[in-house]
Image (cartoon, rainbow, N blue to C red):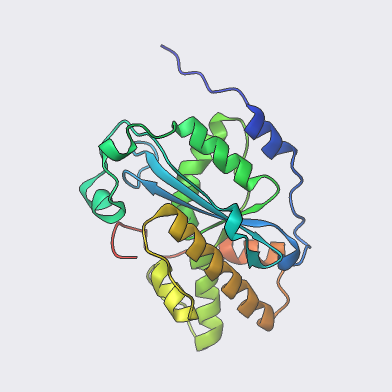
Length: 231
């Protein structure tokens, strides 16, 4: 049977119609949204999303009441390393909303906002495939790991760390509270708090705009891929 891509439904249509913040806009004047995924593994071709958390940021502040969390129904078991981290078994998500419903919630959360990820390559690989099925593009995103490398270079006056920086480690370096790791909503909240701290600190070096934070996110790529392990 030939696979058919789903049509662009109401959530995708609203996402596409929402105006995107201009690159020249000051970062506090733009809407952002931290997104975190928990997956059965790290291969977007063979693994599946099992939980999604989002946390909006407006005027440089976390909008706690606007957070979203959902489990996602999966058809395969998580890899051993994954289930030890996020504690989600196949039985735990058997009655959860479908992936299509979960992605619609992400589209709604990101409408008119800029995505914020920690180690963006992972989340964008999974979400990019799903957005593509709905015939919409995943916007350029801010990456707190990449911004953290930029900040550490300014702070230490030298080269950024050669290896990846976990979300928990970066939050600790910034003096930020880290929520319970490897829960999608908690990690989205930590990512949002870390993003605000980093953008504020980088703002003291040079005025930050939407464009400057996106460019810094794109230019600072970690040299090591993320693997399942302590946050």
